[in-house]
Image 1: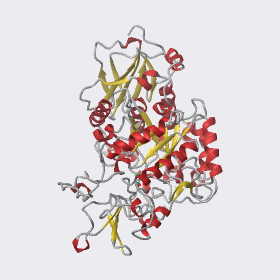
Image 2: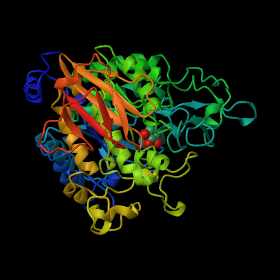
Image 3: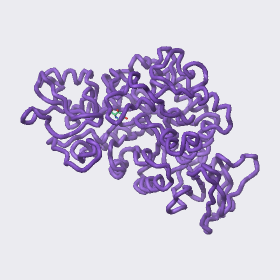
Length: 552
Ligand code: NOJ
């Protein structure tokens, strides 16, 4: 360890080590309706996104250094599930722009080294998809077997006991043909029959279409649900607190055939240089998600994002498990804390510690997200600590979902304190946060200690540190109850991360064997960056909610 390298040396080492873009991150999730409206119709669009690309990555450390944007769906859709009900998989909805706009987005992203990831929603389609319209037209139609149709059971009951995640049974009766069709989500989202080779070929063609258009990554919506048991067997019952939890969904997802499809997918992706797929593994154990990760480049881990308690032990246990499961050379973890389907983490954890402390908490979360071994995903707005917005029932768009509307986490981005927060020149499609005048990008750009500036510093630090990019991850406190402290190490380069989860001062004592004397402060929420080198001590104090990173 005496050959510990300085930060400058690490930067020059980075020039010779090639790290694929998708391992570096951050990857920034855009919910296009809510990011930036250029056309003045109250809905975000592609040209709006183009106008904000410099904010995401302007090539210097004054931006977020985003390596890729993931666009939630922008395809033609009736909008029953905010675009996750696709009618035309290869056509951009005019609400978001034109083909030319999309080409320009790809070109402008390329100039800034930003890759584009498209959301592939291929488990189901909209009921307005031409495929489904034909399928529904009669039992002998060309596309009949593209969807999952089945006769009623005796007494006209649905074919089996499967449930919809949103509400009610997973089957809807079609009067005309006297059969049921299956749907894991809304009845307006009929399930494709992935056992039909024509469906698989059509889906691969959709993916190829977007890769040919210049996209570098695919996010696979609920991909572990594609295949169902061939005999549509009932799911076994179990004890549970919700209707959904009262069965083991073993026959309606995670079928062995999915592995075979992943092999085909990987062959497709390997024919496009440095392209990648990240899987949304729906309602699954993390072991199952990890089992797909030799072929998928990454899979989302919901156990970590959905930690109920603001406590370091729960996070550390879940992270250790994920890190261990994905420790082989050919697997790679990723981390996220918020997305378009769950309450924003500033609200979740802020609700627990008190909203006054939510911003301090948000910085601890950010420091964790950017310093774990794995790609960080950032959900638009979290970098300014955006929170859920209560949407009155009569203004909700996301309806009919038994666990509650997801509109609160989908509100318009808060760019500045002008009317409509600079998101749009007119009233936005969804009401915005009341606090936007005090919480917006412009304001936080001017505050050196803002959450936004901390995200920028973290991103810059991460992309210039081999220890943070590639190093292994080792927790230094076995059963943490106040702080999480961990080490990242890569070939003689180190980063030590200390995160105080409490609103009290605490003392951390490092193991005597750690040779920390050469390790200097790289970034901190609390320690002054007055130009003086601060060396790490074996025993040191952390201020309330302090997040500090030392490196060597
Ligand atoms: C997962 C998506 O993230 C969610 O928003 C959507 O409602 C379901 N898939 C159905 O497509």
